[in-house]
Length: 262
Image (cartoon, rainbow, N blue to C red; front, side):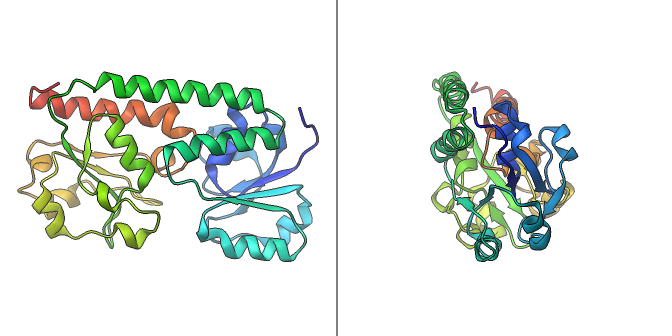
């Protein structure tokens, strides 16, 4: 175990990982969007997602600052320019998310715990795949990450849908960049999803908007339009395995029951 480390986490999934590894003590600063676990909100807030209080971070003298994705490259550049050590990861698939948990475990001296955690998540993923393996067909799913413009689900979301027995109607466009995932209402209507998930990053989903847009779509006619928690599904970390698999499987099973194919 490495004691006395001071780590600032610019995104939520790193915070949850450290808590699950029993090492909340290494966290000295977090993003204002931290939701998991609830007690993590006690840490000093030093960042939004694409903006950070650089001076405050420098004054805190962390041993390491951890961020995520190309969207935080400017923050990382500024902090490196001020002499801080920065790690920015860019995990985009379920496999990469599990690898990142192992990396974080090694950084804080909890590699064995990280291996056990990843093993449990991998087993849960395979168990979920096994539950739906015998389906005669899979319901068509539209996952909307943002509404204006319309963005469909990122890669790890697409994998989660498939693992839970659904067919992501935009799986072929589940790229890492938002512009890769922009879709039109005409495309959604043409693909006629049987389930719609609204999971808007940073604001509450207006479920009635789907009825207005797609009154003729099967998901709307069968009332299979659901809001999902972005703190679970839009963070590339443990939440996907802790709660995401169960929540998505439950909704897909509900839709399957309606069509008597489960």
